[in-house]
Image (cartoon, rainbow, N blue to C red):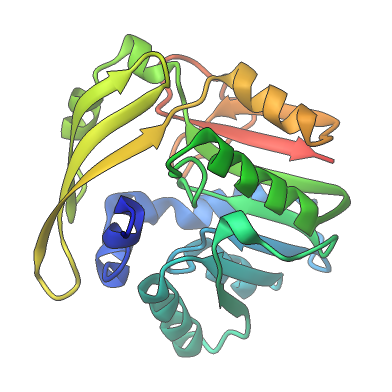
Length: 252
């Protein structure tokens, strides 16, 4: 049986690229470049790369990027865009829970909930973190965003979704479980062929102390957490209860 995230991204490559949150890609890559000290000899792994928006932008800037994703439709779109832009980079169909890379990359990205934290269990989410860590060289850097568990405690998810409506998908939160920090919601969207789907989803929200503990258990020596503003990542943004996402920058 396919999971909700497999159904959502099964035929949603073009629709995804039209979502408003994708417009911040270039500015987000500005932040990533700065974090990498503009060192274009570095190899980058983009986990849950989707249609390749960050991978392609970084490749345009001269970085060697490998993108992995579970969705064949998203990867097809990424490869088409790469061919159109005459960019040479690798896109691989891969389950992020089963990454086979070992000490290969200088940096890894997981942005806009690229796999983590969409999995059905905490153990599966941890497998993604573990696999990404194994793929990194010593002293490498991991940059990712994830859902901020402080946000639903002080804000209405339905109001947030209503005020920040997506063009192709509509979300309605049914229950936020305080025991598991999972939001159970109904998502309605039209795929790239115009067919409408309604799916039951659940997403894991994390509080900063959990992220810190998980990364410490994997051997990261430096862990910094900031507020994540789409298209405006900054170390100046202290994480607050008003941030829907958190931005994590960790070094091995």
